[in-house]
Length: 275
Length: 311
Image 1 (cartoon, rainbow over the protein chains, first blue to last red):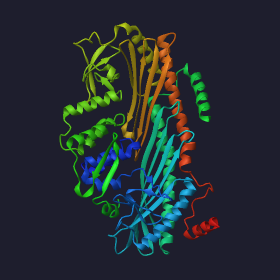
Image 2: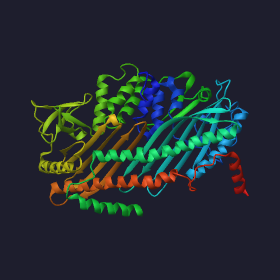
Image 3: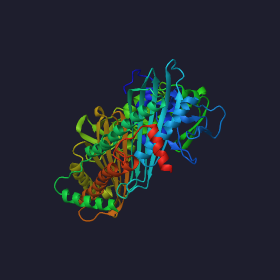
Image 4: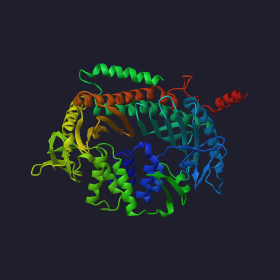
């Protein structure tokens, strides 16, 4: 993440975001946009924000990728809500692929998330002729409330895919951001927030002989593998690392007197958690 | 990263962003690139700087400065912001360049903007907030009203109790404590941090305790942890401990009470991390589907399955 241009406002902003609380991404981004308004478009593209979902009968996700003005395009109907004239839409061929993606990605969401909302938005890459190019974002949001341990938790997956199609083959570039946030206010814990975001990139090539069907297969697998890998990193590495940091500041271990006391407390904590 | 769509669709759109400090901003975007006032920019910069993770104020400052008009933050203003940061987070500062001589900066220790009480030596320490250095003032004694004389014995005893607690639990990182008094009340402050930016992490553990005239003690502990290697993960905890009466030997009961409170918090955090991995994260996203096999990314098969389900 080192910046090549020392005063490039984009890398500077990304560095700032890496230090500010990930539980307040929206507020921090709003502040950054005010500090460097001329970078607005790029900052909105580069800094992912937690997703929100629509209140329509079949919900979809609201993001910068399906917004035009104050309206959002519903991926299930291809209509903007509220309705606007000349809202940005993918070409009809690409819309077909978008429909397929939304359908299968919804099953993928159900398989791994057992709830939540997913949406896929595609757009044509107009500068990519003579090859066929498109880009898209694959979004999943899952919220957990009043879990045994967590008052409010949220998971956001944002996969941005760029596809450049050549003869019988396509190249895919994937950028994935995962954002997780958990709030607890247990009797023993007080107000605790644990939040994190991580971004990874990957590229791959795949055969495209049967058009959309192959795109679905290639992109689907790529996203699935990326999510499996990042979920494991988020859990085992990123979140646990903060626990390790806390214990480096304050040692849990006590010399002599405390040991028995610690054991007693351990029992107590276990007892409270099973309630 | 990607092109066209976002750029084309966000021209001249009205964007209402979430609130910063409870206020709502409505921004006219794109085309006009509307500038906010310098006062507003300063307010945002200050808000960012006060949220700097442990040991990363200067790093954040270097970046925030790049986004501001040249010299918008005057040296005086910067000192003011850093002082507010130090006091807010009970920051630690090395005295006289000695690694083992660390004092905690907090509002109870503050005589003025640059002078702080070293409650162990009862001397004045002159602090350079921005430079993060401090020196012992040798030619001027502590003002006579720096401590409340009526509870001096209690203050000294409680401080000895704190020292004991720090020795047991904060021996690995950097830590300091202080005991102050005013109006018959004794305030105890504990601060520990560990900063390892080369390996992308830092953390702090601070707490403030108040003992009143009847030896009732209340306290608040704040914990921050940050890991940012190719990502950004932060833990923020604030736990208030309700009033409890200290009985028996004061020194021992101070050590014991604070240890009991903070130990239970520390263990509860450990339990939270365990539950999170075993339950909460699983409730968000499974490691593998219930079928234990990965997704079949096949549109034909997918349609058939869907038809079976709807029948």
